[in-house]
Length: 154
Image 1 (tube, rainbow, N blue to C red):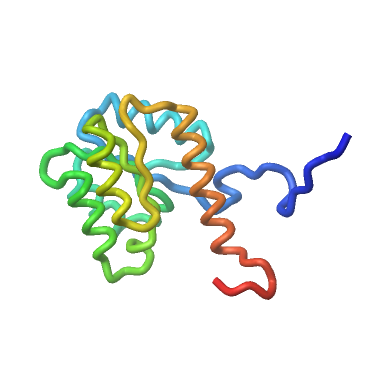
Image 2: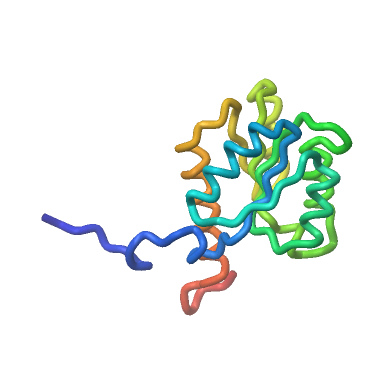
């Protein structure tokens, strides 16, 4: 039997790929708990916020590797948060991957999220397997970005 060749060895955990902390943003506590539990099961630490403004404050205070945010929230919406992140002059904030989770019509939200680099969309209700796959994909991109193959430019 032919075995697949792996350039990077066995499957890695998200933390070994560089995803150590996720910021979970939703005004509905039960949604934050569901997402928090899923992310923690992947051995990634979490920080939570109930609106976009508080989330942006958390981003400035903590090293965050991925943001998972709802769209419809008080104070600042998820799009207000996304625009503040992408408009930031802090390169750490500007480049952080964002996963947008929303129950709003998929096409409108998807079209808007496509305007931003490193931004992903998942519809509500959240599919836990899909969230896990999305986080693994993001963590792999982080690792590849931080570990270029010799002779290749970033």
